[in-house]
Image (cartoon, rainbow, N blue to C red):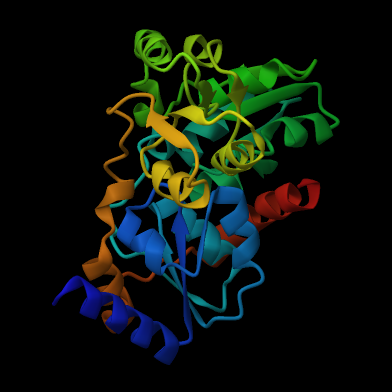
Length: 302
């Protein structure tokens, strides 16, 4: 099927099924172009609670579709590729977290949304990269277990007087960006600002003019007078940044900043999701209820 016909068929099926397509900022351009909503984890988590559609096609990775299912138990949530996982989320399990919590009985557990429903269910509150500092500082506990991203947790520790106990997880994609690559890009584009995602390493963040979530990057790019920006996050961001800011130039900090899992979804798989219910994401009710409370507390803070 030709690309234009495929897009037309997706739109037809979406309308017939009363469905909504949500896409993360890291998705391929074709998917972003046909999505009803494109955003980061927090934006899409909020949207999932207000969408009236009976079916949600979540173009992202598994934990994101799980979050949508947690928030919308009476809607059908579809993930176009079941193999679109998150290596960071797989670096922690519910059982491992329970054992870790036992070592710090006075600590609250703050769980980055890049985690499974089971891990969310074992946590006190969730957070995203855009609200992590606010979430941590909202808690009465002085000791915080932060899972699973050590880089985001270390970044948060710079903005709080609480003791942050880090889990040794990380995003393999952001971890590939090195200090040397950033310095090389800054030398090649001396008039450019460098903005970085807090999932990057501390030595990379130290070189940034601004550290923020993907939604923060869109705001920064729109508001700044700087005409050239080096982007320290996944390549998918360049599509919307360029589309929304036609007078500005954007450079990827490293060609290694490509998440293979985010790139697993494509138009053919979105079509199959709508046509054949591939693939329904289900969260057991007992786990869903506990995870829901963690997400709900986050949304209340945000």
